[in-house]
Image 1 (cartoon, rainbow, N blue to C red):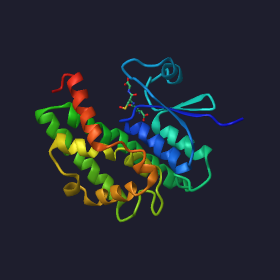
Image 2 (image 1 turned 90 degrees about the horizontal axis):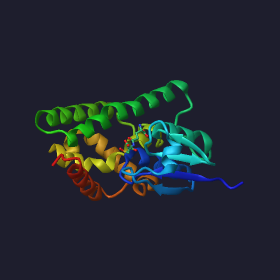
Image 3 (image 1 turned 45 degrees about the horizontal axis):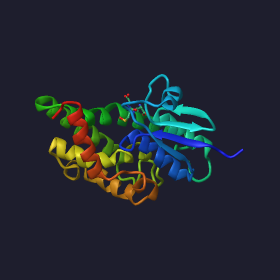
Image 4 (image 1 turned 120 degrees about the vertical axis):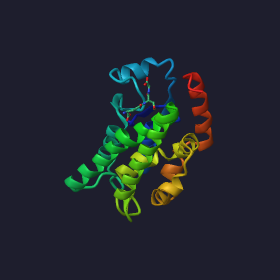
Length: 219
Ligand code: GS8
């Protein structure tokens, strides 16, 4: 039976972009179905009845939800080429820790930057930069979070780079000044086709964010 791989997504979502990058790293062909989150499709509601969110990967009719879980699934199912998670259990745990940190700390603070105003915005920005610096410390002098090879944390965070431009404008700061090593890492990731092809244009994201803020009454 031919394999069926379907991705339910939203073009601006870093969570969805993670899945695109992981599939590209593994050379897996898939069908992409853009979702309208203001009017959720039956397919999305049936595939992710608990969270009702994208991404959902539907592999041979079976849905898998939550971006980091999907990336790990992809790594386990398509084993040709190099694996995204390290072999060593301790290093695997460490990679999972930092991917979880990106979601709980960095992405959380980033959304507070554009959602809030005044003092709350300043706090979110300070926290965002502090969390990025901690992540930059974890990268150290390695080319990738995975060491010499692009791995799980690299997938988890590179998917988010296309939002930096909007966040810099929203928060009035420069990533290059705050985290120069992390920005060198961004450049290295962008040299990979899996990343550059998966990331939407940063200006389009900025336009999207402007419209979203208007819709949410945040302007
Ligand atoms: C987050 C997915 C998510 O927030 C993951 O997959 O890692 N922890 C999950 N998806 C959003 C779109 S991106 O902001 C979503 O689908 N939202 C729909 C909703 O909240 O109704």
